[in-house]
Amino acid sequence: MGIALILSTGLHPLWAADTPSSANDSLDAKRAQQLLQRAVLRYQAVQDKALAEFARQGEFTDNELYVYVLDMDGVVLTSGGSSATLVGRNVKTMRDIAGKPFFAEMIHKARQDGHGEVDYRWLNWADNTIQRKRPFFEVSSDRIIAVGYYLTRASQDQARAFLNHAVAAMKTSPSEAIEEFNKLDGRFIQDDLYVYVIDTRTGRFVAHGTMPRLRGTDGNELRDRDGTPIIKNLIAQSLKQQNGQLQYVWKNPVTQRSENKFALFQVVNNYIVAVGYYKP
Image (tube, rainbow, N blue to C red; front, side, top):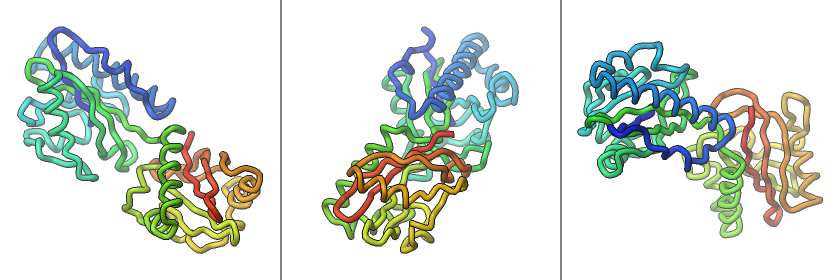
């Protein structure tokens, strides 16, 4: 979902400071802002009569984007998307799949600042997957009006930061780090970001965050859909430089589609630690 809190003085330019995670996410953010602006103007014009309009497919939906509205106590008043099942319910104590009380955070920011944003994880009904979502919100007449967009792909900077954390863990305790990398619900899996590790002495996977079946297998035999020998190329490149980047085609665990993947890697003793980001 996405939420927008609208003030009677008009929209706040809070979006300008945001840095979306990729070019695609930037376009989606702009779409969300435009839809929110239309919803805000409509609400300011007709007040609660707009709630019925927001609930219908049409002017106030844009593919997977939709408007939803809360009152300041946390009751959902209307929704044009998957949160329509929540209309009439007080959601202040609701948490997302990761346990985050995002509605409470949103309401707090609404009361304190009159506008803001909050990240959480929500069902994208366009492809029926749980994804990160970021709503823009403002307050108008004690109504929280919101539009959010899905962040389906991490950026290169986010992948780099994720790799740095993984490398630090490997340097501290390789065995503990590898165990953590292999946990499907661990801290080293975040949407489309995960870690995999290759033993340079054997070419075998010792860790893979999303595909347990690869652990212990010979990576030299692994090829992408275009026939590129992924691990063979990765090991060859690691012999020339301690860190770098490798491109190949791989399934994005969020979109469930084969996409261009750019694996950032760093050599730590006898291991290659890698984290990748996707581009469609």
